[in-house]
Length: 543
Image 1 (cartoon, rainbow, N blue to C red):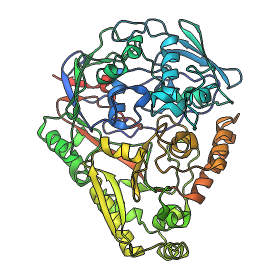
Image 2 (image 1 turned 90 degrees about the horizontal axis):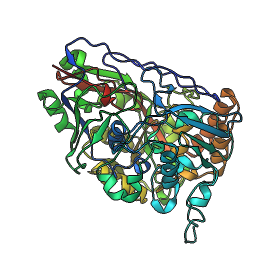
Image 3 (image 1 turned 180 degrees about the vertical axis):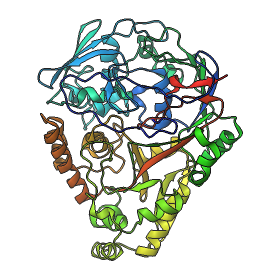
Image 4 (image 1 turned 30 degrees about the vertical axis):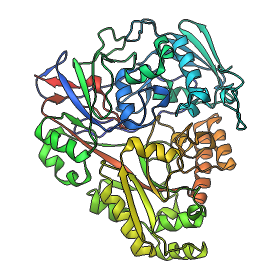
């Protein structure tokens, strides 16, 4: 997601029927390195689910899967553009609706089985089929036949197990028919949900989740151990342009971010992609050239449980948002490295509008008027939820203090659950008050900051709409943007959809992150991109 001492250029790919091939660059840090040996370690939190591409939509498991798999396209770390450096040779369409995907020959899974058209079609059908309860199912909602794979609300089985919009042409070619034109579709397919799966997956998905068989630069020769992690080894038959430089990488699970940082300082941990807030001020002077700072395509929000009667009124949600001084929190807690968010869309993609959300600006007088008009009971404290051990305590407490001072509403911090327990509780409508919600883009299109978080098709368990917001007008405008024939038309529709969100405010945009990471003296060429992922294959172990 970023390069040492270099800020990545964040230029999102435009709309096109045939994607433009771009090349990926590497770092040029000084030092003597071994390009074909050594081992290093990376900090992660506990993944929410077993390691299956169709059911992994959070950063911890996603980081591991990115080392184990290679998708149809990859994203250039300098520009964020989709590049033909993955399995696909080309993705083309004459009408932006029916896409022909041609694969490069010679790719294999870690068990030696070939990566072919069937590998993608079978994987996508499995993920889309609702009885399989895969969290990334909704990424296939725009493929013809997706609805036939969804179980009826009244109960029973879906009417089909395969989407009619997927067709294998030959071993290295398959065809995808969308329900409506979507010019950005080739840009989306580098995301985790679109990874291929080998035949062995379907024999025993549970075993696969413990020890995945991918097609990427590293392979799992041992199971992932919850609470500990996993060591991956270089896949010598990797078909990509750049094999892994190190012999192995250890993904080490930490419950507390502060503990990981202590290990990083002591040299027993090699890479952290995100530093604790209280370390930010001193990290650059402490690590020097080993300090990493980059813009990130993300957003942190305060989500509201719209299913809870206390937060069902948009005016209540707007009041809470307008009572928060985002800049003050950034200055006091994050050393000024968080930019206050006034849009649901990230500045790194086309469609961002600075100041689009008036309710994201501090306005204490208006906030109190809205809360009074809504008849909100200020005598009852509100719960503020966040996942434990990831450095969120201080800034969430600051949010609570501002709500108390500006609205006269007391709060209780609910930050005792690790991420692996916090996320399922969000899925189950378990939030009894506002909650930390964060998103890192899957692909560089404005829709990715809107659809996966707020569309009706992204409601859990099929997606990441943890506020459980639903508005048909919003869904329709998203579809218009997806079907647009030009950049300008798409952006206009996405912005209109955002205006609906701003009126309803199911969550309060808070911050965009300037990400800070660091690495030990044991490694070099550490690249962390705008998607929040470390390029493990590029890391060199210093001799």
